[in-house]
Amino acid sequence: MRQRNKLAFVLAACTAMASMAGIGVYAEEESHDPITVTWLNSYNEDGISAWSEWVKETVEEKYPYITLDMQTYSSDSIDQIVKTKIASDDAPGIFGGFNVQEYVDAGYVYDLSGEEWISNIQDEVLSAGVSGDTQAYVPMDTNYYGLFYNKDIFEELELEVPTTLTELYAVCDTLQENGIAPFACGFGDIWTLQEQMSPIYMTLCMGGYGGFEADKTWYEDKESLTDTFADDEAYARSFEILYSLRDYFSDDPMATDWATALNMVATGQAAMIANGSWTMDGVLSINPDVNMSAFPMPVSDDPADSVVIAQPGSGPLCYNSEDPEMLDACLKVFEVMYSVESGQKYAEMGNKISTFKEVDMSFNTSCNDLMEYVNNGQCWSNGDIVQFQGGGYGIIQARLQEYLMKDELDVEGFLSALDADFKAAY
Image (cartoon, rainbow, N blue to C red; front, side, top):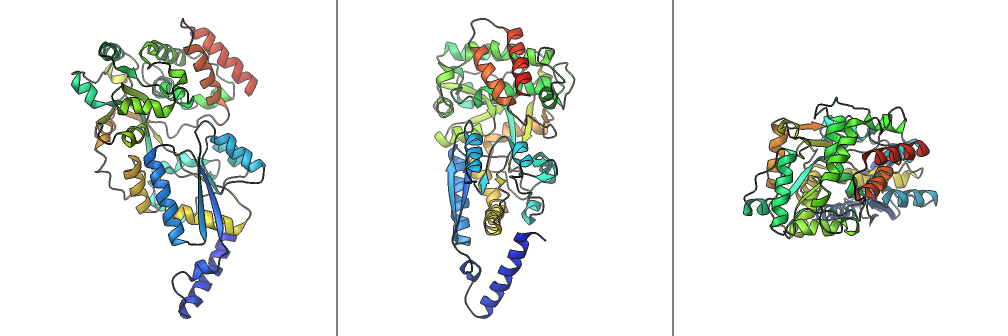
């Protein structure tokens, strides 16, 4: 029996005795010393930040002995902060991050598979959060990669949604002629540079579109050095497409941050962002009246190759604390976080496409166009693909930044540099 279950049994007995004595509903809490649970996250969009505050308030009302200390960092820095805190014996009780396998292998992650609330989540997305034999996290939403755009701008300029690369270039030319940046780029937060390319390379390299074979082990093969970038025709084409869009980026993209890029779309200075569906929340948090929508990223001149990419989202990790009271407190936070009520608020506050079974999504009109592509089969899911487990994303981001700034396209140099970096890292 788990230590926390033993503790729960003792607490239940205390509660029952207190109830008979007429102490009241918070008798369980009175048997605890105050405890603070630290939650490190990268919830920088206003909607998700508001939801996390709701979780904090609900936890502290339901369990008065628990204080939830929310600490928010950028996506670029959170892994290093988590590692530093763990190394200094100041591990957070709940945390986010991208190096999930590394945390699991080190024994830092508690297995959530036995928690009762997991039944609130759609069964088909659970495997996305499994690392080895551990349910490291439980996806709270499904993200979609594509192009997110200010629909009002398109309607004002009478622009049709492009379905091919040629059409996309024509739309970008019209936008520029009217003084509007086609793509808002916040590459000062370097993770957004990777996301600019994501809907291109994930489709060409893994999805089986554009005349290429599906490759579900693409990331693993790169990390194991069994496959090189230099021999990857699909990835070479992906970089060529990205470079061809360079002249349509907003001004000074490498010095612009993500928040500024979102503001550009929210205020009509730019028309599109290539990123994930969390972009909706970011833009609508700035301007709730903006008419946001989405369409697939064209990767060829065949409209059939334009698809959105579905990816089960992330979720927080629970630190595998040796302190049974700390672990129990953390799991009480998860109990609130993954309640049906929380799932509904997460979807509504964050404009998310929920993975909860009982959430009503009819409110989310901004995703109507996106879901029409999904329902029509213009979508593929990468939920069964194991992504980079080490520093692969960081290597690619740095080289993308370097080679996108070159005056001439150098695909061969870009791919060779990546191969050298991966060989040195792995």
